Image 1: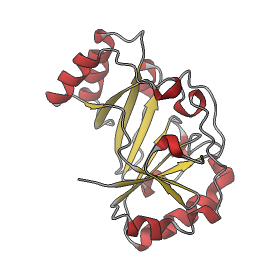
Image 2: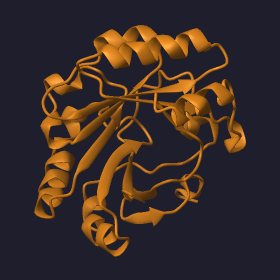
Image 3: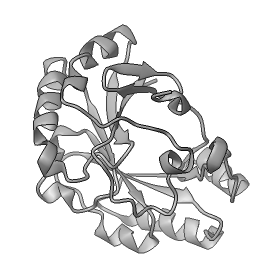
Image 4: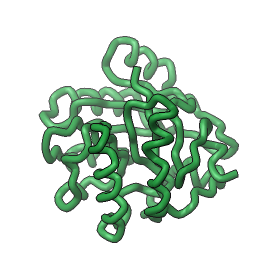
Amino acid sequence: MDKYMSIITNFGCHGKCPYCIVRENGIDVPETTLEGLDSLLTRYVENDCNFISLSGGGDPLHEFRQHMDYYMKLFKLTRALDIPLEMHTSYLDAGFAFPVEEFSRVVYHLRDINKLNNVDKFGMEIVRVVFVVTEEMTVKDIDYIQMFVEESDKISELSFRQMVGPNFETQYWLHDYLKQGHEEGKWHYIEQNDYNLYYVNGQVYEKFSDIHK
């Protein structure tokens, strides 16, 4: 089983998501720094990880052109140990200018079903889409998304996860249906938990809620 070290970035964010676990719970993710990568490989090795992902915080690709020095340093470090990378983002067009080929998987977090048509594949990366389940979402919506992904020649993987509100309170909308589909192999249903280690400017946290306390 893969063990992820998740780099939690804060380069700012578009702030357009109606749902945000960071905002709703007042998590103070410090601004991401270039020097914050200095301990990455040490922390990665000592925790026996075999995968690195980037997420937020803010969206890792927010104004990425201003932070390419960070990414160039990250790529140099991870190439040294042949470490696979995964990117989590809600920017669907960044791949036209960002070196997506450095990532073995890109995970697009979508808020609108219609945005499925805008998901692209830029190279050999595995493309996954993730939807946070909202109160308005229906079984019909879930089935439409699943069928779209099944027929897509760009999207390989599909995940659903529940919304987490203030005080890390998890909602359970369509829980039974989503769990059944997961067991049948139709999609991944990610139940709320701390599955990864979280890396923030050299510090490692086992719980997302503990970041920068």
